[in-house]
Structure formats: structure tokens, C-alpha cells
Image 1 (cartoon, one colour):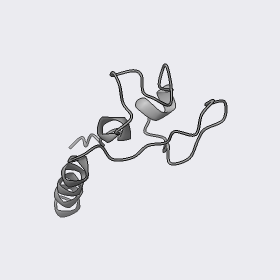
Image 2 (cartoon, rainbow, N blue to C red):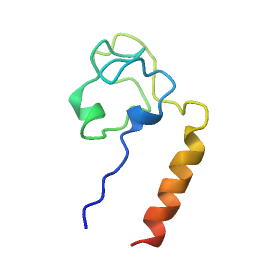
Image 3 (spheres, helix red, strand yellow):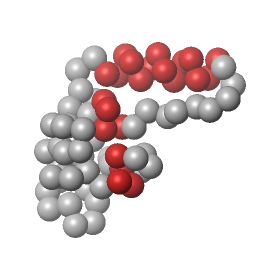
Image 4 (cartoon, rainbow, N blue to C red):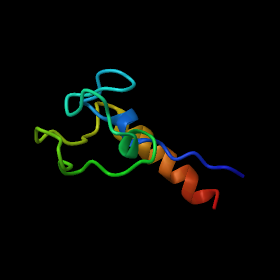
Length: 72
């Protein structure tokens, strides 16, 4: 069974489009695709904006996490 982990960008309050946010004009692939954490600024970012839950997404994440924990 293949599991798809949600990308943090999907739940970030700073996201503008599928490929941009307030932190990046173009979100780095290592974050948007590979899921590297963005809890602190990354080298060369140019600002101090980091990931944070958008309204309502904490609950979605908690539900996803509980489903994943019970299906393992």
C-alpha cells in the first residue's frame, strides 16, 4: 500500500499559489515536493517567514495523523 504524506505547504497560512508563498517566489522542490521542514528560515531565503498552520488545517492534519497511526 502506498501512503502519500501531506506536504506542509498544503496547510500553510503563507501559501499564495501552488508554487509560491510569502516566503518564496518559487517554493523550493525540497520543501514543496520532498517535504523538507520549513520551521526555520532556509539558507538564501531572504526573509524570516516560516511555515504555520492556516485556519482549520490543524484539525485536518490531526485527523490524517490518527488515520495513519491506526492503519499501520
